[in-house]
Image (cartoon, rainbow, N blue to C red; front, side):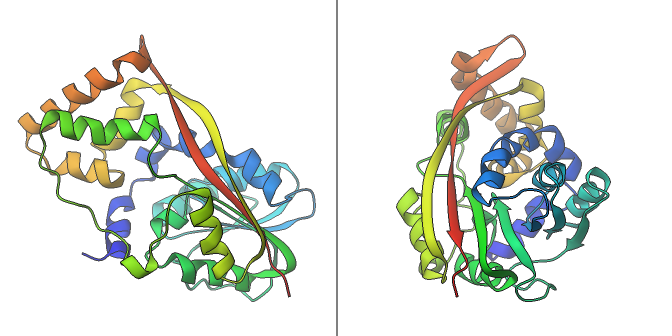
Length: 267
C-alpha cells in the first residue's frame, strides 16, 4: 500500500475519534501558527488539512475570511459545523481546486507529515498564495518527543512484532528537524524561511487519549487495531506502565513538541 492510500485509510470516517483524542493536542500550536502567518482581521486565509476546523475557527475569530480544505470528508463535515462562516472543501494535495494567488496566507497544521509528496504539496500551496503572502506550517519532529515516543517504547516492551508502516519514498523524504523542514520549504521556492521548535506539556484524560489508538488513528492505531485481543491487552499494559510517571488520577501530562516553519511567497 502506498503512502497516500495508507493515509486515506487511517483517517477514513474518524473525525469523531480524532475530536475525542488527538484534536486538543493538534490544536495547541494554532495561536503560534496564525501569528506566524500574520493572520488578522481582513486576512484571506487558506487552512489546508483543516481536520475538524480548529485553526479555521481560531482564524475566523481573528476576523479572517477563511477557506478550509481537508482530504477526509468526515473532517470537512465536522469543520463545516464548527465554522459555518468558512468555505470548507474536500481536496487532496498536491492538486487543490482553487485559483492561483487567491490567498493572503496559507496555514498547514500537521499536514506535511500526511502527504506522499511534501515538495509537490508545498509548490501547490505556493501557487495559491499571493506574492508577499505568508505560509506557516507545523510538523511533528523526529526523534519523537516523550508523549509520542511512549507508543514505540510500549511496542518494544510488549514484544510486539510491528511491521513497518508505509514510508515516503526516500527521494521525497526529509529530516524532521528545524533544518530539514526549512530546507524542504526553501527548495519548493518559498523565501524568508525560518523554523523553530515549540515545546509544551499535553494534558488529557487517559481514556480519551487511548481511544485514538483504539479507533485506529495513526500508525500506532493501525497496529493496535490489527492485533489479537491478547496482544492488544499486552500492549496496553506496557503502555500504561511506561506512561505511569506522567499520570495522575485520570489525567496524563507529558512533554511534547512541534516544528513551526514560516515562509513568504516572493515574486
